[in-house]
Structures are given as C-alpha cells and as structure tokens.
Amino acid sequence: MNKIFIIDDEPKLISTIQENLSNTNFQFYAYEKSENALRDLNHITPDIILLDLVLPGMNGFKFLEKVKDRDLNIIIISGQKRIESAVKAIKMGACDYITKPFDFDKLEKTINTYLTIKNIKSNTYNDEVILGNSYEILQVHEYINKLSRSNDTTIMIKGETGTGKELVARALHFQSSRKENAFIEINCSAIQETLLESELFGHERGAFTGALKTKKGLLEMANGGTFFLDEIGDMPLGLQAKLLKVLEQRKIRRIGGLNEIPIDVRFLCATSKNLEELTMENDFRKDLYYRINVAAINIPPLRQRPDDILLLSDHFLNHSRQKFQKSIAGITNEAKVSLKNYSWPGNVRELKNKIERAVLFEDGDFLTRDSIFYEKTAFDQMSGNTFSPGQLSLDEMEKQLIIDTLTETSGNQTKAAGILKVSRSKLKYRMKKYKIDGKDTKFG
Image 1: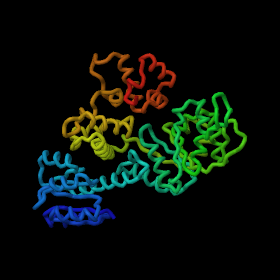
Image 2: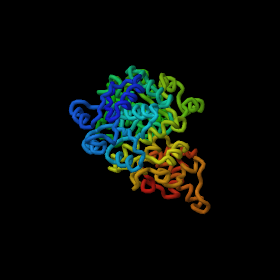
Image 3: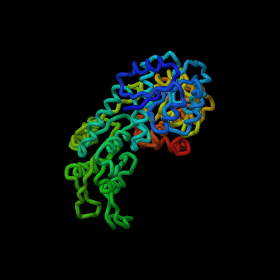
Image 4: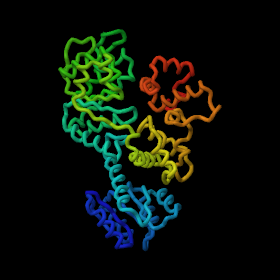
C-alpha cells in the first residue's frame, strides 16, 4: 500500500482529498503542521507528499529546505497561483505543482505518475523506463508480467527503432527466476558477419589465423541466464541455420571444436523489420521464424500513444535536471503542444535525447519549444517542416539528413540506411562523399 502524507492546514480539504481518492490503494497520513510531518519522516517513508506552501509555523518552503537531501516525491498543492512560487518550489526539490482548487482526477493522475516512476526506479534493470498510462503500453507491461514467469519460452519483441525493445528484454530477464544469472545481448546488425559466428559460439585455439587461445562464445557465457539477439532480422542466412540448431538441441560447438557443449539459456529476440516479409523474400529462414515467434510482444511507436509523450517528457526532464544539476521548473504549454504534435520518428530514444539536450543548454526556468526543437533538423523536415529558402544547398541538406539519422540511431548504419530507404553500401558511399564520421554526429 502506498503511503501519502497530506500537509495542509485545512481539515476539510484533507478529508475531501481522502474521500476522492478512497478507492485507490493509498494509506493517508494527515498533518495540519509541517513540523509533525517532519518528525514522522524519521520512522515513516512516504511514497508521495502533498504539501501546502502557506502553513502555520514552518511553511512549505522551509519544509522543502529541511528535506532537500532526502529522495522524496513532493507535489505542491497551493492556493498561490504566482508562477514565481511554482518555480521556487521546483528549484527547492518539489516534483510538481498543482494550484487550488484542483481537479481530483488530475491530482490522482499526477500521484500515479510519480508512483509509477518511483516503482520503475526501484527496478535495477532500467536505466531508462517503459513508462506510460496508455492502453498499449499497459498491455506491454501485462505481457512482460505473464511471460517473465516462463523461463524457457522464446520471445519475439517487435517495434520500431527507439521504442525500447532492449528495455523489454531486460525486464523479462530481471523479473524471471533467471535474474541472478547472466543477461547477455548482441546486436546482429552491429557486428561484421565474419566475426558474428565467433562471438556467438567461441572458438578453439588454432581454429583460424589469429586464434591464439580458446575463447568462450557469448552463448556459452549466458548459460543459466538469458540471451538477447537484437535485430535478428539482420543475421546472415548461414548463421541462422546454426542458431536454429542451437534452439532445437540446446547445444553449441565452438569453431574448430569437436565436442558439443550443453547450454541452459532463455532466448529473447528483437527486430524492427517485418520478418514475415523477409521470409517471403527468402532473406530469413521460415523454420527459424516459427521457432523464435512462439510468443510476441509488440511495442507501439510513440506517435500512436500521444498521451504518454508528456509523461515521458516530465520523466526525462526530472532525470536530466538531476544529471546536470539544473533547476528547470517545467515545460511551457506551447512546447507541450509541439511535443504532442511531433511525429517522433526516433520514438522514445529521440524524445529522451531532445529533452536531455534542451536541459543541458537551457538557462531559463522552463523548457520552451525553441529549446527542445532547437533547430529544424532533417527529422523535423520528414514530419512536414522545411528549411527556409536558400538556407542550405541540396548537398548540405542531404549531409544534415544523414548526420541526424545516424544520431537518432546511435551510429547504427544499418538502421540509418533502413530509415533513409537506401542500401547500407549507398549510405557508406554518401558518408564518404560528405566526409561524415563520429565527429560530425552526436553519437561520436
């Protein structure tokens, strides 16, 4: 049960809050003086604190000062509508500010948002979050909860670039009974074909030129745990046959080895491609597709769940202002409209990057539309915006498009080529033509 402190000198309001939130899983602690709440913090750790600013004795600002070194979710509930009060409270550590009289549905939604973030922070598998209140993302969580109970079922995770497929894979592992053992991942599109087999299966000493000692493969190292094959649609056909054998027999053989080594591994696969289409084009084995598609989790693109955009934006804002030690109070309404209207081709990853970049360079009290969408990038153009006439030449626009696409894919050329709808060789040619390397992109 979630513990909520209500610190307000209006007994009727306290009762009204409790009544309106009575059907939820909350345990309330009511205080008309903040000194009493401060005393109870010595032996009770609340999940949420609802704090009025105007109080007898120690006011809300003084309370915030007293608890600034504690990790608390404090939501201000105040009759003061001055923006200066909201900015000051956020700078002092409050996570949100709601003015009286307030909508109780909004209050409950705000409370649940910060409870969700708090719960996610407690899961060690997440550097980022699978966050959202939309039906689609709640379905993802439901599938994770159900499928994590099965320790052996092979699971396919589908979704566009940047939707959070790796986070789902980690959640499946760390919520399973295999969580104490290894979680090993490999991106099938990020490693050269000649090296991928050695990485997966390992090799014996002398198996090939340069094999100076025996090396365990990643599959062997994952024994007892979970093995995550990201972008499996990019795995070479020859290697697909060997992976199928591993899935069926649960045995591996190192390159140059004679003995088969049994492994106990749970396989998770992910792809941003349509594997059914690849099988029809004979670019992916049908038998392997049927073997890995036992159970599937589909992650919706961010544009299909616009109500989650602001929730994620607030989360990334909170994370970034702590990271950069900034005291930014929030996001302007104009910026929120732009955030919801943008198409987000790079999905959650792109949103995180934009918010983080905006917080890093913002000197004011709020993130504005200009600070979030600080320039009209190539991705902005793909969503309908254009450069001003004469601003860039055609070659300069193409170069910027490639740089922005590589940035959004963290330098993954195969993914970037897919987004740009060109072959990887053509992308590499254009990168060479425009002399694009890691120094030009924000992933370098």
